Image (cartoon, rainbow, N blue to C red; front, side, top):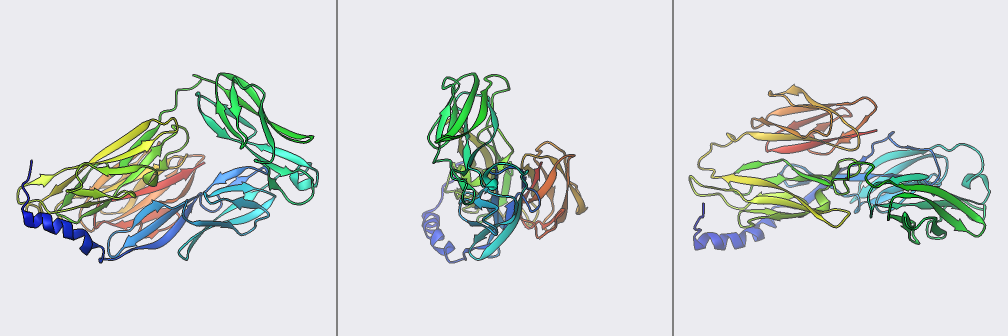
Length: 413
């Protein structure tokens, strides 16, 4: 339906953003780190583990929102002799021991930990000059797939373990299978096997790389938006959208909210920020509605574009009594593990998400108090809730629904 909007409305639309700037500012409430404490044990010098920092923020009295701030926090370790960590949250083992992993932003601090266990013998910790290549073996399944190799050790045997990745010479024994650049990045070229060598002077270390084209189903990147649809009543309603999936097609489901581009098909009706925060602009006249499309656009590792879209339907507040529109609680899984998420208590109806990366949702009445509990599948561990939990424990998340919301649970091996 095409609406004719009066001039006075268009003027107010231009003025509206100015008024909004005085409502308040976003305040960082808390930070959580994934994997959680006790989850990571590395068994070799040079092995690495990726940590992710998730922030819970709130603007004024609005509902809290979550975002991935891995690249904007300050990362540090309590024991630099055990491991180092870079600005992207990648921790690398340097010696045997235990260290705390720390993320800090605006005075808010979160901690996880890392344990390194290495068998005795020769190597970087023995005082003998050495080089270690990590990972020790890799299988790639499509042309153009890349793997980052690293070299650690000590070229003199004096002092601690060092990152030697850019100090050694990298060689691939079969460049028709894979090539490697000066920084240790391997690119698959054709089927076969090759030996990757890191060398400096008389020292060297090797790893094996196999390219098995067609050995497995080609990787298919995925992208989805949570919640899958939204119905708002009136203008000024705010909804936090979350993009999940994997842009490489390999590995676990990830929170991609800050890694995609967000667009609205009609910004005069609904706006969207680049953190996935959508706002309905105005209240439709009596008996009318509008329904623009929100789209998340991602770029895969092969350079192709992948999209996901949802509709935001905005109803006139004069046609629906306050609170009559059902609120939707959407539950989803992250990480490389699986598990089950259920409602242990609270208002019916109940949520029961099965194993296997399920995304599910359920409608509740305004003000419903819902408690979610987690149960990892055999061989997996629960690593934490994403956001929106008014009360969060190691096993449960309690949320009071004043608007539609989403909660993610992370399961790891």
